[in-house]
Amino acid sequence: MLSLVLGGARSGKSALAERLAIASGREVVYVATAQALDAEMSERIAHHRSRRPTGWRLVEEPLALADTLASHARDDRFVLVDCLTLWLSNLLGAEDASRFERERDALLQARALPGDVCFVSNEVGLGITPLGELTRRFVDEAGRLHQALAQRCDRVVFVAAGLPLTLKGTLP
Image (cartoon, rainbow, N blue to C red):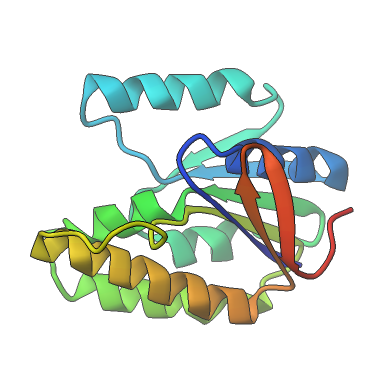
């Protein structure tokens, strides 16, 4: 089953995805896309680490997400990817500009993965149109990615104030 959990910053989306992972009863592989490039991000990463059960396997991969999923998705596993918007930022900032399209396209072809895969992502398109070109591109690309993934996913959930709103499929 493919799931997409969307929400704003500190909305509870990661906590919901973690509860889904626990409820699955499967081995969990947590794919972290964040890079600790400053003290604030290091703090956020530490916060997420402190919440995760110690038995979960951690894979840190900021760019090659499709390859990582192909390597770790199994019938008996729940793979939790947190988060797609950080992954998107990493790709948009990569030195090889063509890598973004290759990695995005590879991810969108990954719908035949075994087991459960849950993507967590920030919904960033609910505010005003950003002023800067790069920020506008990021918001546009995130929106396109979310739409394309939502079409492929079995379950899509939007989280606000810690409350899930199921947009597609059902919650256990």
